[in-house]
Length: 437
Ligand code: SF4
Image 1 (spheres, rainbow, N blue to C red):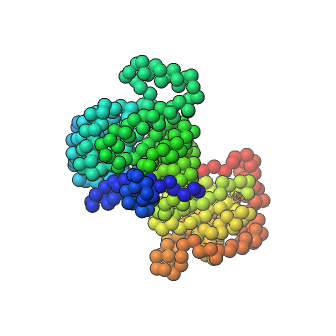
Image 2 (spheres, rainbow, N blue to C red):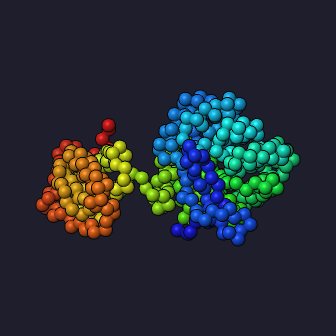
Image 3 (spheres, helix red, strand yellow):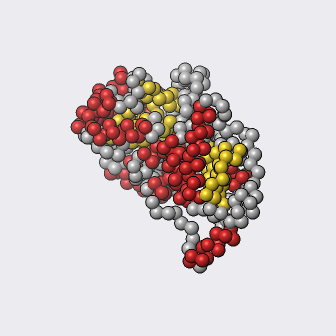
């Protein structure tokens, strides 16, 4: 991991919502230094999927996303009725809200008037200088930041046909990434000049593409050129199943290089998944303190002797419902790699011959049949959580040393017995599958 890149810091929110800081730590000697001495933790953002003007539904969606861990929530304001709804939405919510503005600069002015905590502008569709200056002036008076977000999809000029032809010609005639990157940087420079000339520096930048490689190139280049915090994202990443890979490839690569101050993963799905996956990315990289249990599980192989896929899903749900501390829980299919992989886990189970042996920080606490693994594991996790809370034990203590149980003893001889059972039932042809629930 490279150290985080310092930048100016922007602040979103107020006394009621609490303040979310983004970026920071620019050296005092830098001409744009703002005095922030520390980099803020990388924050997670998402965007509501419903209509902003349906106030009750919008408030409910914001509450849901905030409860899931979103630090900041953005809403679309395409129409006047959306900005009219903002004042009431802001009254009923307790997380910083960003108004996403395209095409109509007046929506930005109305959103600022309503009290939003940040405005997002797209240079691809609000480029008229007096209009941009009006938004800058309103945000300056309100003391709120602006995100300048260029997107691959709206970066090519579409109104000026001559310019568009020239740009498109160049796109097809040159290396695509190189040319698009050049347009992104040029448009950002032109746009930011308006802000600087108006003495406005509370800016975040994004430069999104649906192409993970272009996204990495664009942010890496922008990180070198502009001293502002960076909002990372892959735009139009697609359905969760593939969008996850696309987003994590780009965002994970940038974050490990120290680039990125706030992230938004975008899926064609319920935005709650964007929050969950964004948090998991930051937790996995050790960039945020984990909330809730961490589940480790083996992929299973020909040694498996319990229905581990179903067990893992059930354990995941139990932990999400009942465990608040970052307890590390391991669910492993057998005694071959189980003990080694379970070392370092606070609570572990490894299975064999339709049974499971449960350990708490290396101490064996139960040996139960398969159907009792889930309740016994839940009990062990909750007891352990209580002991951590009372100060009796500490999370992640490294004195764990699990001795593999005797495969002929506590867990039985397993493989032969299970194989015989499967052969007796269907000739051994049906693979183990997840039980339908
Ligand atoms: S823990 Fe056992 S069952 Fe799971 S993958 Fe490793 S060897 Fe296979």
